[in-house]
Length: 223
Image 1 (cartoon, rainbow, N blue to C red):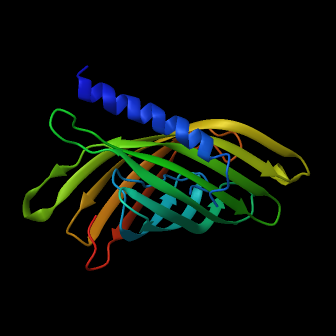
Image 2 (cartoon, one colour):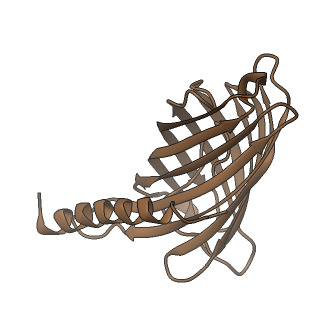
């Protein structure tokens, strides 16, 4: 392992430790079982919409807003219609992304630290999630200004529910999940994004999910 690679690895570990501390404070994005759809760089501003299947049907909207060099805040909102007899859920959450490393020289990976908190609720249950992790991958430049970015996004989460499973019980557990995805940047303002989430949560569900969506970056801003 080169000195540069060791420094990047150390920054990732330090970032995860920092995020563990930060999640103890309210972040008030991932509020339900769906891919986080998070690529590798902090955004100045973008809007995403996606349709998610695999654990029922979910409609997802995301807004990311720059908050300084290599940092953005994020809002998630949408509706989930889970499989089975569970009621439709409304979810909302917020979070942040912070760039830890950018690809250069003999270090080919971009690394983005992520943390969020979200709430999903319906008539008979309320769910709360606090996930944190890192999105890691590389951007490959294509012709005519296009690019392709495959990424993996592992996350640890604290999951909780109140009046879950249509009774008066509450529950809390930790879970591990990860996304595998790809972002196709068509031009400076438009991208297509596909991601699958593999969840280990016993509270919000362990079904694999697949999201297909698009991202729009307003004119005058760049990624």
